[in-house]
Length: 354
Image (cartoon, rainbow, N blue to C red; front, side, top):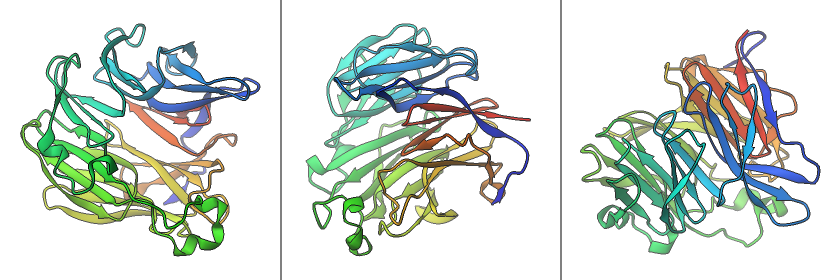
């Protein structure tokens, strides 16, 4: 890992800077090199929050605002026109690149959807929610065999990710909830941080090789909490867990071989918290992190954004990032040669090549 003295830089493409209000971005997607959408909520210092989204159709040169009907949770786009938005109260579909949205499903506790074509998709969420559709999301059917394969109380299991590398090979990740040793958040009680374990009951993965007809499930991280995951190939996954102790001031990327059911640490970063990673369509790799504030890795204070890019883990180098970029959460998006990053503090960064 090296620092870039010259080369690509991450420059500010958009920043929400209205007085007495913040744009908290929940999710970010770039279906094409010119079309990106960030969705979340405007949080006002006085008044109630309301849904908000911004869209660019010229590669980040200009951004326009829109107001979704419900609070967004996550985004998924099949291509540059067809996509789905999971909200606090259901699922919405667009077929015109987010110009209009139509509600196709009502419900709560939904986290993510993934579609392999315009009709066939999967939905995951809270309380063992795992469902599939064959009509574009108009109707969903539960998959109880998969949901019940994770050993924990039903209310304590959340399916957080579902991904298909191709129409046949799919992975779903579930997290079983747990309890901290004490009621106070770690950052309010730093003296006890070194003695406390992560607040979770472990992470399980469910794997399908027949297009989602059958799934095999198993543990991939006992007593661990998942921060983020990426799926670069049908037989490989990248996982980032919370450290076992909040006083461990580093992050690691774990590569999981789904075929052999084996894990290997492939990248280590001191002094920062990895929040997202992604493989580009051209084989490139990006990792986004924030500099740790103080002596605890899970401090609630926004940290300086750090982004690393390269052809593989061995060649990763740190790119210069706009000095104003700070965040508690970062989301990467890639389309063709273009890379973007969105922060939960309302900033969009665009990777610019010299």
